Image 1: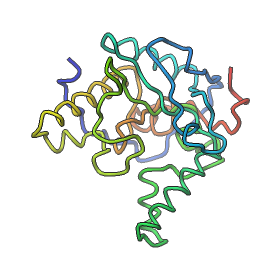
Image 2 (image 1 turned 120 degrees about the vertical axis):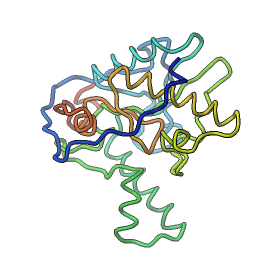
Image 3 (image 1 turned 90 degrees about the horizontal axis):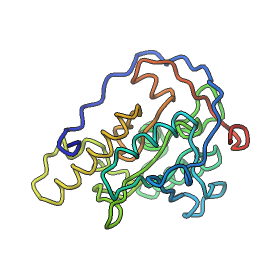
Image 4 (image 1 turned 60 degrees about the vertical axis):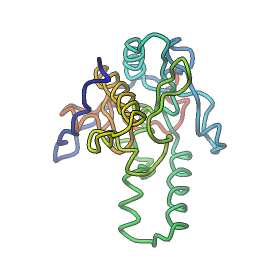
Amino acid sequence: MKQDIPIPPEGMPLPAQPTLIECGEGMIPLSALSDKITVYPIYHRQGYEGATAEAYLRESAAARLVRAAEALPPGHRFVVLDGWRSYQVQTSLYEGFRKRLLDQGWEEGESLQRLLGKFVAVPSKDIQKPSPHLSGGAVDLTIEGPEGWLDMGTAFDDFSEKAATRYYEDNPPEQDEERIVRANRRLLYHLMSEAGFVNYPKEWWHFEYGTLTWAARKQEQAIYGGILQLSDKSG
């Protein structure tokens, strides 16, 4: 069972930034794609200006998400929290997290910028160097079972060390509740990895396909540049 297979350490990326050649794929709305996928547009629900009530991914990324969903155990489905993310929303998230850190006592400077960069991609309008979600190749998601969302150990957008995908691999559980969390993370990780996605190691919920990060990890060519307007690529 996938829940019994440990999540492996992150592989080493290429030292140089991969080449990006935009493939031209459109974006697909996810809410009606499969009965094994539901959309919970978290930033829209939280009231972020510009956030949409639908979630979108590029065509091939969406197809791979369906492939992963079809391998879920009976009675389970994916809950997509976010897909393509506009520059406007990315900027709001970045500035919101920056304000939280300043309120916690951090001071402006390189240390603050490094911490910010670990958890929230720097907003960019450069379509050749886009933040992952701007490309339409990144998805944030969890799993819902018969009794609700599976326990993943932290909430979405938790920036503590426990949000790291391998936290319960590096810190072996001593309690049954933590073993369940580890099993749930393993299930999500292996389903998505086997469908061709790569995970961002500091966030159990974040996976990418076709992006610059994906290309570096897979030693492939990136195929998804930035999409500044939803209408540019939506099908």
